[in-house]
Length: 294
Image 1: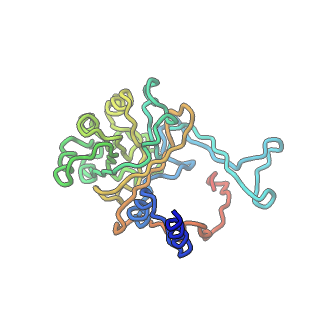
Image 2: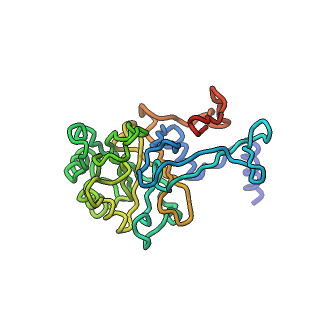
Image 3: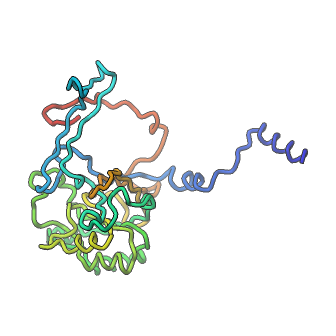
């Protein structure tokens, strides 16, 4: 016992480090050098949104008694007040409670949704000739022929490049947009047992009854909507980090999706010494009255 204690003290005094905990080792080996691609639109007053919800309004947060806006000069800080027209805004995690009250709301989505394998399937070429093209089972099987079966528990994002028009006036009112067929959704969920799928438009499909969205949400499945930058993510081999605001009983979810890509991937940013503290911005943050945002 004395000899063992002496050896331990000698190792400590020599600066020997303890072995890394397994998950820390995973981070160091797999995630520290990875490239991170944000798949999320910023929420702003002119965000593309269904006309049935209408626009949102931003303003400076004010002191309740005086109605005076807080300022850096007088108070040492500023804050923003958001009057959001809906919880179905921007890039979203759409919980099944949006259509069916018997299934979980956004605050009831389990924490196990946090990290998943990411599959990206492109229908960009099909959309060039058919703006209303919907992902088919044949498209899925073509991807699987190249990469193997879609992994169980994964997230499948459908790339259409529709999101490159985000913010254009009237975009959300267009009746024709790229979608995902009901047959493809049933193949992914019932045969491949994915976690959820995602798409760039604000609806799953442009059928008269929104048949794909109805089937998903009525049967307890979630989905991602309003996803961006899928052109910057590999079709196979990345992971997806999933975060969302936890509003009690929320029937929609403001979400942030970040693709974690291999270190040699051509897009994205890597972690480094500039992460903390963050660098100063070229221009100070100021409230822009004409734009109604900072």
